[in-house]
Image 1 (cartoon, one colour):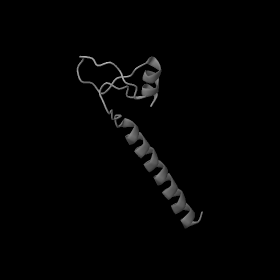
Image 2 (spheres, one colour):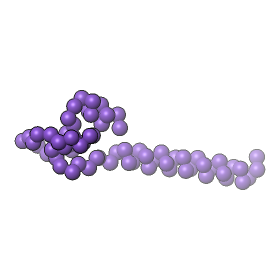
Image 3 (cartoon, one colour):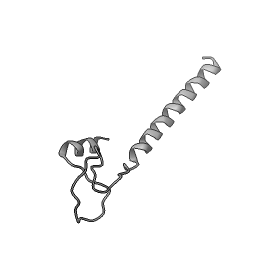
Image 4 (tube, helix red, strand yellow):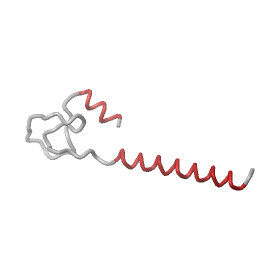
Length: 70
């Protein structure tokens, strides 16, 4: 194989790994919520509650599944 072809393949694999790492890092960042009384998936307004401060709440089982899959 020609040397430039090997360099090209190496550069492609490096960029592929870099893209995967950045996608993984972005998925681990928690979703920012405007108000603690909104659903973290769809943003639907929910009733206030006296529970402790958590990362957020979801309004339905469908939103919970979407949040768990992402």
